[in-house]
Image 1 (spheres, rainbow over the protein chains, first blue to last red):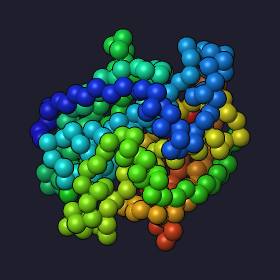
Image 2 (image 1 turned 180 degrees about the vertical axis):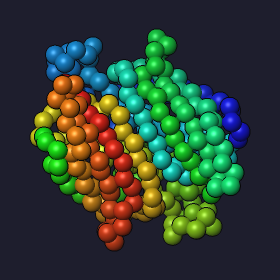
Image 3 (image 1 turned 60 degrees about the horizontal axis):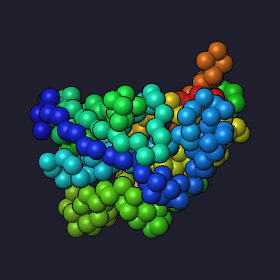
Amino acid sequence: MKKGDRFQQAFKVSDPVYRGFMDLFKDRNPLHTESTFARQKGFASEVMHGNILNGFLSYFIGECLPLKNVIIHTQEIKYSLPVYLNDQLKFTAQVEDVFESVNTVDFKFYFENQAGKKVANGKIQIGII
Amino acid sequence: MKKGDRFQQAFKVSDPVYRGFMDLFKDRNPLHTESTFARQKGFASEVMHGNILNGFLSYFIGECLPLKNVIIHTQEIKYSLPVYLNDQLKFTAQVEDVFESVNTVDFKFYFENQAGKKVANGKIQIGII
């Protein structure tokens, strides 16, 4: 991998993903589960859990890179717009820096929804092990 | 919530959590699934997915705070030691700042394993909605 390399991947926040995440981690906050509550707070409907996107990031790092001997060192994410059930997200990551002396690679990434709006962005640093 | 408030929560990276995370997000990187590969890379056995910890954070924010009208704005995490299957993690979060004018609360957090070693730490900013 070298600076400027770009990767793209499609992810859907399907009903099985939404329900599976709640079954696994038990976060049933009303923002995620009660449409009336979510609408009172100014959202169109139940807001999907932001950390579903971090699960997609796990898949990207573990499965979509051209090498498998990787581990995540650090990651950060900023949520800018709500994600709703059945949103189709386009994920884009770009290599920002490669530090060969310490075997690390820095990425910037963002997720866009089907309307082309950026819903989240962040950074991730991996180690080559 | 006010500056200095502390919260603690126990989480176990049980087999259902580990397998459920892989079923959900399909990250079957050999570091997470092949003990031989993990040992070749210097780990004691398969390393658990770091983003399982972010799922625990979702539960903490959504379910463990004294108020439910919250949403995550940003989060970052640094992984410092590997987490293994059946590790019992103690999560600690502390309120770092409360910004009443914009209804946000900043936390620092860390996860320790059963040996008292810090395995990950980070920051999270939530909005009160």
